[in-house]
Length: 602
Ligand SMILES: Nc1ncnc2c1ncn2[C@@H]1O[C@H](COP(=O)(O)OP(=O)(O)OP(=O)(O)O)[C@@H](O)[C@H]1O
Image (tube, rainbow, N blue to C red; front, top):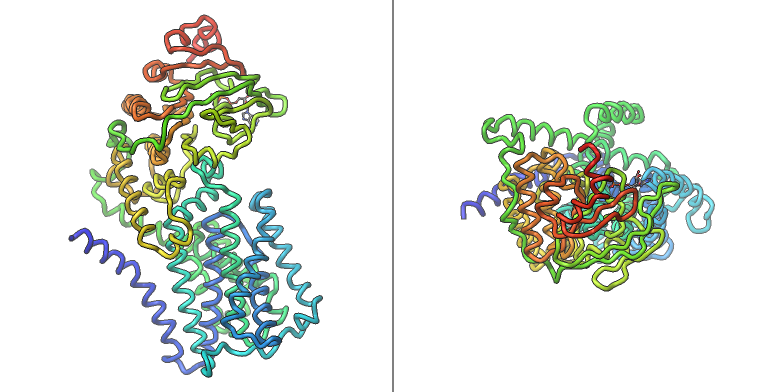
């Protein structure tokens, strides 16, 4: 009971500054008789709206866009044309504006599937530049340089909204969007977005399809920009090409970066600092360009995570300096990783793998030279060999992160030679990487929950609408994640940031994430690297326990003692060729193995 009360009071404490901010903004027109203040507050609110959508795209999904201003223009002109020229109501025109901007945003996203984020920045910059020219060129539709005038205010029946009503409308939209974005980033969708941003291969290995996730992020960015444009059109009453300069597009990216990318408060802080403040201190408005530049430089040097990020860091430092030294977790010695693993049973029978004539080259380097190998379901199958012998490449081919040049990969009698990695994740294949790939700035709990990406049943609409079954599923999975963390010696630390963990615990966290998938086949790449002797012992117990629950384990490992103690079968590779495969004593005692591997200095 007291726990529930504590959680409630924490939620109230967290919400309080936001409630005060919204109440203060809503009271502005009542407290100040100056219509300019109301006008500026409305504009700032619209910028926060667009910035929040861009934050989802850029902050959470890592997709840079310099074209948001162009999408705002699309929303504003669509609304203007429909309302001024065709006498549509705002309520009918705004959804169309949103849909058109989503379409335009999605078109802009197409190159994102093939290009790195900096090329996407260039593509979107091009879109921003082209938008203004197009607005001028299509004079018949857009009014050319003079733009569209006489866009009416929204009306509710006979009642036309005034300036302050529009401010309240913008505030209400912002509150709804804020709650939606908060729900998204705390859900599997948000975790999937951050995985695409932080480690695309890891994202695929847990079942996230990066292309779909990027598309979703661009669609969200397009929708908010379109809605922002619709509101801007009725707020200004006219739209001209001069409203949508290149500076206007860049402003949104700056607002997000300066306020704090991937922080909910980022766009609000960014807008207040870089739009509202200079506008209010009228003398400063002309200096905005200089202020942007100087502040950006200072921030990038001293607080690359933006104002909200710097504030979070400061609070974390204050909190940790208040923690007595003996309770602070500073090394891995406290951790008691190993059994019991507290993972539920695998989601099906263990998976077997068959490789037939698999070849893979990187330019002139032949990493795999025709591998034929059978991995029996329900076994621990170790792959050993000297550095560069092709072990990781083999795991990558099995997990489909790499496509082989020749040969076939059969998973449980199904030919998956052309399947994408995310499809294998859905079939129950999980992966632990050679160097941990985590959501560094997310909590340990969120990292483990990411492992359940393909297990979660609730779809996007159920998550966004916070439907009861979606919330129930989320709560149950969070409990399971906490149990897994406890089983890995990380009890009571679910809210800590993953990047703050020492290396050994980051590895354990990855294993916990993989187990959260309830895998039928677990691929582990050198999980023993960098572990202490105690952690190694626990890892051995853990691997056996995982196999005993009915999961096939493929273990790439240099630590021969560990291999000898846990493996049912050992396969030895050397320079891309399979040397031998068999029970540990037999395989590791083979004279060829002693020559190619064990004879080499350890
Ligand atoms: N993406 C890549 N591009 C170019 N060469 C690569 C790539 N990945 C692997 N290689 C090369 O392929 C060969 C096999 O590499 P792989 O990482 O599979 O070996 P490994 O047995 O896992 O080595 P280690 O034990 O050092 O991790 C090496 O010569 C490596 O340099």
